[in-house]
Each structure stands twice: as C-alpha cells, then as structure tokens.
Image (cartoon, rainbow, N blue to C red):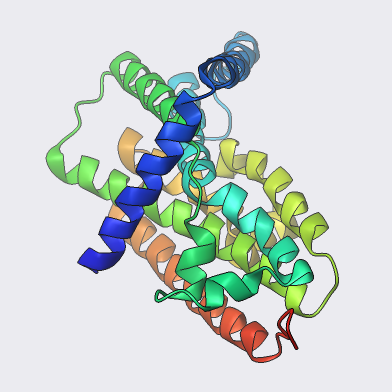
Length: 264
C-alpha cells in the first residue's frame, strides 16, 4: 500500500511540473470552468425566481447539490478521466504491453499515469460554493456529517471510475470503445439535478443500473440534512460502488486474458 502511495505521489509531482510548464493554459482552463460553474448557479437563481421548491429541494439545497456534483466530477477528471479515455488506444496500438511489464498492477498503472491539477482547483471552487450554500441554509455541520459527506463524495468518484473504466475495457472485444466512454461522460450532468424530479423507468435505470443520480444526490442530501436516513443512503452508495468496482476488476482481468500484445 505505501509503495503505491509513493508511486502516486511521484506521478502527481510530475503532472504538477508539466502543468506549471504551461501556466497560461492552466489559468485559462481554470477560468473557463469557473465561468461555466457560475453559469449553472445563475441558472438556478433564475429558476427559483419563478418557483419555491424543485421537488423537495429548496434553492440553496440545489446550489449545494450542484457544488457537490462539481466536486465529484472534478476529482474524477483530475485523477482518472484522461487515463481511462486512453485505455482503448493503448489496447488498439499494443502500447498496453509497456504497462503489463511494469512491477505494479496493470490496472493501477493505466489508471494513474496522468493527473489534471487544474481540475483540483475547480473542485475547491465547488467546495466554496457548497460552503456558501450551507451558510444560506443556516446549517451547522458536525464532524460526523462532514465525515459521511466526504465518504459519499469518494464513493461517488468510485462509481464514475468503475462505470467509465468498464466501458473502456470493452475495447478488448470491440475495436473502438471511445464512443461509449464519451457517451457516459455526457451523462454526468444528470447527477446535478435533484433526484425528486425524475420519474418512472428513467429514475430506476439511472439509480440502480447506471447510478448517476445517486452520485451527487446522496452526499448533498446528507450535508443539507435532506436525507431522512443518511446512514442508509451512504450505505446504499457504498454497496453500489463496491459492486461496480468488483465488476470492473473482473471485466479487466477477462479482457487481459484475451489480449494479444503488439509482439504476438
């Protein structure tokens, strides 16, 4: 475990050095993300100038939800997105061979080779928005609630990683899987809407089959005290993330078993 943490630290350091070599690009993308995020908050303000609640969510609860979605999405993009999207190309070109020869787990190697430092800055901005929303709600956060929220956020990142990596792993069976990967990434935005606005089969699919709705709604409900049973909600998210990660691991090993290297 400590060995992998040291490797992670070195990879993060190299990514930070690379980002600082192009400071203008780093600042520009951060600025663009901030504008996009502020646009979402402005939309919420306009929306709630015409309505009192959205389902059982108030205005500032929805702002906290959007901020939570921002945190989870940006953490995922910072640590995994670029790496996961490159897996199909590694398999297609045979460059996966290099990672299979490394003295570390191959799935870890392909999932952690590059980081997006600018995304971590944007995650902090999302955290600031959540804090502002809580001040407007007049909610005082206990240590236990903050711990549950942090766990739920990390579980949400795990869900996104597991689903997206599973889709990338399909490249062992089909020529190009990038379309599936990018398609799921476009579903991210579903998670920033309150769960109570969804109905019927759509809600069931995106809660139990592709649990995008759970990812941000569970931690936001826990933090704003909108969850009737916060422990049960976090437990549901925990079981979902463990199941999906286990499936991802199984699918990756099955894919490797049928992989033909560039030298074969």
